[in-house]
Amino acid sequence: MKIIESAIEMCGLAKNFSTEGESIGFVPTMGALHNGHISLLRKCRKENDVAVVSIFVNPLQFLKGEDYDKYPRQLALDKKICSAEEVDILFIPQVGSVYQKGFDTFIDQSHYGRFLCGPFRPNHFRGVMTVVAKFFNIVRPDKVYFGQKDYQQYLIVKRMVEDLNFHIEVKMLPTVREEDGLAISSRNIYLGPKQRKIAPVLYQSLMRTKELVAQGVVNVKRLKPEMIRMLACNKGLKVEYVEFANVETLEPVNEVKTQALVAVAVRLGNIRLIDNMIITRG
Ligand code: AMP
Image: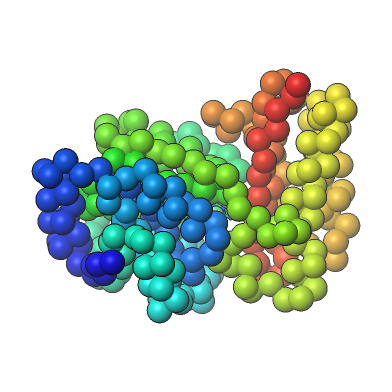
């Protein structure tokens, strides 16, 4: 496995792979790798000649007061994981080499940022899109891999790829969960024992909704309060949002007609957790 710290070097390598006709798969991450990331690495490894993984904690996507400085970093372990998964290139640039002095160009979206996490994390997706677009230009991937856990991010990237004519296939893989249903996240290590015990309620509330839809309860006016009740009865848990949305546009729906995205964000103390499920009626 090659470890590359310079964007210029990464660009050069990617160019060579392209001219040699080798397909490049790419998994962008912020590190602190876990089984969710590993499922993406494995798929990427399987489907491409060259597997590239980036680890970059992107300051642009953290708001003031968020956990940029405290975000878990475990580079030595991440290197071992990538090497064991037969990643070809681990790209770990420094902040200064990604955002050089005078950096002044950003990518933004107008529609998708209005929904779900958008209003709670202003400019977050602008930071994500800007770094993802830069990395797409540096790595020149044919296929990129994202997790359903961040469904809104996946949709936004997919849209950007179409809108800006990147010739890239954007793939989404299912959310990997702990045994009790909690969606695995690098931030889960922040959870204290009591919070960790409460945290699977996000998944339980999604499963309860799935069950109700299967029983024919499809009106969001009935489903949403039930979810909020299940979540909010836990001490120390604050619901940020529970939304039922169109899977393509993220616009709110009143009824689960054929399919709906059910998305939830909560705060457990200072820790923000998100989860979602695509629920199909029928
Ligand atoms: P992050 O390091 O949190 O920026 O995540 C990098 C990629 O891994 C994103 O595409 C995430 O959606 C994906 N990811 C994170 N957690 C999971 C999970 N539990 N299951 C599947 N994919 C995940």
